[in-house]
Length: 405
Image 1 (cartoon, rainbow, N blue to C red):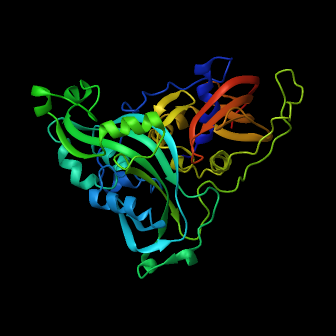
Image 2: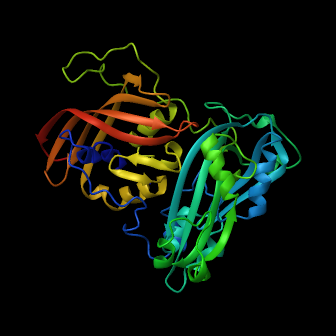
Image 3: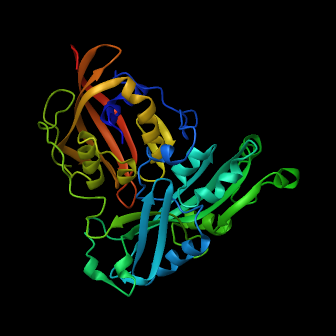
C-alpha cells in the first residue's frame, strides 16, 4: 500500500515547533484537495485496501439492525468478500459465537463530504454502487454522525472458530470484533447548499433549503444521541452500527502482540535516563503500527480509530485520508527510513495515553541528506485501543548527514 509511510512520523512535528524535521503541508481535515483517481472502476479500486473496518452508513438498514440485534445473543459472524470495487458483507444470523460485547462510552461528532466516485468507493464501499447516481449534476454527498460509544469484544483475544455454532458457520469468514454505535444522516445536494448547514442530524434545514437537500439514509434519534453523549450511557434509540471492526476467523485481533525493534534506553532532554516509575507496556495497536511501518505493510484502519483527532500535522482526519495523503505527497519528499520506538521509555500520560521516545533515520530529497532524529511522542487511544491522537511533543536531538540513499 504505502511504500514510504514511515517517514511521516517525524515530518509533521515541524508544525508543532521545537525545531522538528521539515513538515509536510498538512491537508484540510477531510483531505478534499488531494489528487484522486479519475474513476472508481476496476483500475481505480486496485489501489484501495480491503477495509477491515467498513462504514455501514450506506449499507442496507435491515442488515445494520440485524447486527445490532445479534450482538445481544453473542459474537456476530459475517461473510466478508472483496473483489475489485465489489465489497460484500453478509450477516449470518444462524451462526453465533461464544462471547459478549462490552460497551464503552465515546462521544464524537463528525461530518464527511464525498465529492466524487473515488471518494464514495474509498469511504463507503458497502452501498457505493447504489449511490453513484447521487453524485450527478455537480452534487456531493454529506454524512453527519454522532458517535456515542463502542461495543467491543475483550482486547488481545484470538477468536477460535470452534467457538461458533449454527448451520451457517461453514460460510463465516470473519467475526465482528467491535461496533461503533450512534446516529447519522446521509444526504445529497449541491456543495454550497450542504456546506451552508451547520447540522443535518437534528433540526436540520428548513423551508427552501430543505427542498434542495435529499436525505438518503438516516438512523438514530438526534435527541437521544445527544443525551447519550452527555450521560455517557448506551441508548437503544441511538445504537445504530455506524462502522464495524472485522476479525478474520482463527487470527488474533488487530491489537496483536507487539513486534517492534527496541532502541537504547530512554533518555531525558539532558541525556540522563528517563524515570522508570511510570513505566508502561507498549499499547498493542501502537506496537503493530511501528512494526508494519518498518515492514512496509501499513494499513491505517488497523491502528487508527475511524475519527483521528490528530496525526502529526493532520487534524480531524481519518485512516483513509491519512493513507491517501501519504500515497500522493510523501514519497516524493522522503526516501530511505527507519523508525524505532524505545519500548523501555513508554510511560502513562493519562488514562488512555502514553509518551515514548522514537529514534528515526530518513533521507530528505530536497536537502540530499540523511537526518537522525530522536523525538518524544504522545499517543492517545480510544476505549478499544485504537489511536485517536499521534503527535510530537518535542525533538530531543537531530543530526544531518550529507549523503545519498
